[in-house]
Image (cartoon, helix red, strand yellow):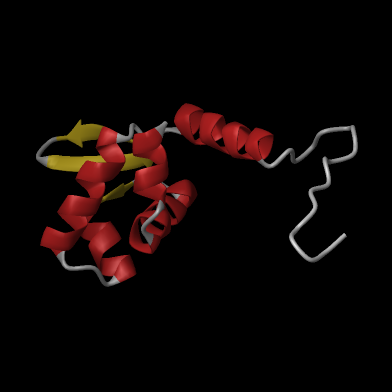
Length: 100
């Protein structure tokens, strides 16, 4: 899960995932849409692949990238659990120094 959070920490990688949620794209299409240099994009895609956030399919000589939905859903569920989003019981209140 650490790889996933590391991958999500960079805004360009979040932008790439956002683009891929709309439709599968080649690296060239991603670079064109997001105005990212191809060498930079390659590094971002490698990090997303290492975190298993994207799947890659070869179509002839072209690689097509798509969001790995199961990992994205698991990550969202972990974040929701971490921040107790969606729990039916009231959240635990904490006292902040100098505040009630």
